[in-house]
Image (tube, rainbow, N blue to C red; front, side):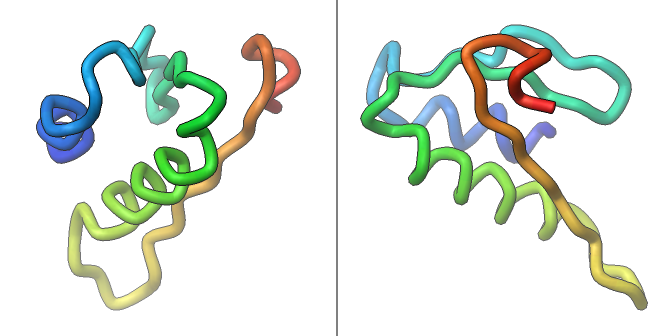
Length: 70
């Protein structure tokens, strides 16, 4: 999550905002034109957070609200 926060500082201003963290979930508001690229990058950063003997998977859901994203 720290790597995601640092990455957010490098992208277009006001194109993404982390709204909240709930346990192991992160909730973002992303401008529609950036959704696909940003979701892919966030998943990549989260999956690379640690080196483990088993794959560390990151999943993402997209929707207009938290319920739709699940």
